[in-house]
Image (cartoon, rainbow over all chains, first blue to last red; front, side):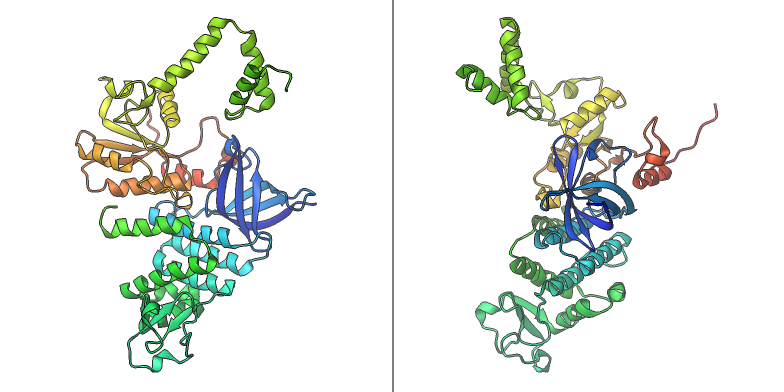
Length: 262
Length: 202
């Protein structure tokens, strides 16, 4: 088969033998693709320091005759390195969480142009530092769930279908199993795990549907961030069926930072 | 393969477990050992046994050592105010070969890697903080790799050491000696340009 040229973002890289790397890429047209970069670890001309996590690349791949065999990375050139992500462990942890989620959830060789744009957007914003990593993570998780067909229902009660904004209470509850919010009248004790203020629900709805480029201008209260984070970081692994290791790392790091140990 | 005696088959099986050694290479090595003098094979066997019995991690820097404290940490000629943080003992060996460093080392035993679940508790960051808290260290040189994980580990250590009166530096990244500029990646070139230095006129 002739070589294929595409843009790609590095989701994962694993050492293979003494010199090779197996790199998992997210591409718009082919979705998740695993490629072998031969002699990449000692390469000074073909892949010098560019097959790094989260790097955005222009790549040329070639596939053998075997349909399920690994594609071979022939060429790669860097289009965005995202220098500032690697200069912060917190940013690296967030970017790792997003990449690992995609790596765990995506089927290989299925076109994912929207997901590619979403990941490229959040990585660029994370690198630029205009938007808080926590807000970007809420945006990413909400939109990923929407694209995966598990969009949390933040509009109406998942049980009685009422509009909770018409009720007196200032908060609602959220259920992983029901896949969205539950009004106070329907929420029994076992459904009261995640409490969300109505203000938080409104901002989460905006993050899900608003223009992502405007997210940097919005002010999110610490309460909204904490509530949204707690709910979505339970919701996403529940529906994807796997808990990313980087999520545990991220949560541990945030606890260390909160205790001032970092 | 079955035509070999059982003892030879055992040796081939054990040798082929070593990294980079396949069945054929293991067979060739076994044949070589079979033909070698008895004194040579005994020396090899004894050195492997002795290594397993005596080598441990230095209690101070966590490099490989024959005793509780390694040779470098015991050497009074080394500058104990200068501490270089590396990932693995092999990184320390490379720096030692360069002859460019005369301080002491701290081996982390890896780097922070969110996707592999390696957090601050899995590598030796707390012992490093304790060494710095001891007060003898004036400068910590972070010599972790320049990968995303290495850089972010360096950033994390810098944060952890912020509250101590110690200078924290990072090894420079730049164009390799004898390297061709057109083959150097953008990241390295950017770093090299940022770390450019004035040329002193003699």
